[in-house]
Image (cartoon, rainbow, N blue to C red; front, side, top):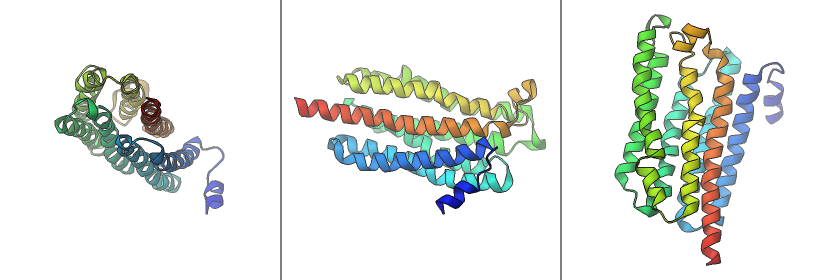
Length: 248
């Protein structure tokens, strides 16, 4: 089965190649995170479980997205948003779990989840339900609504409640880790609005002629970097804090 999957990938199609590579990389990351749960203190086990779920869910979706793309040659928009609607809120959950010991409340968790859902649902409506195949006003309106959710998460991670709790945690490893995750939100997540603006009616599509079909390659690379990278940062926090606690 594995050999047949590899042979089915066209040699001159980097999008199909990155779909397959992303699938394998995220599946391997899930196995790693699940196995490493036994190496960290009890308080970090849920964080690694969530990291494994993020990459595991993404791996399953990439398996189906790869098949969809190879059968149709089109962007699997609905499957991408299903993946993101499950994994992005879980990435936000990591912020809550990392700052829980410093006093993070459930209200923070729900605000982050609701902001991520707003960001994704608005983005999906803007991309999948664009009338006339490319209305700029529709694209901009839903893009602005989606951006509100993104800016809230970005602000909370850099300057708001998450940043303040990490600073007050008394754990420099957590503080540095949260700041690294905030960089992922600022830089790593930036590829997604760029892809959104490449769809018919989007600013980059209208202004520069960029097409959404060319963005799949960057989506695939960004997904692997963001999701696996998020998990590795959490793993580093967990394993370093565990080693520090044992040394004391």
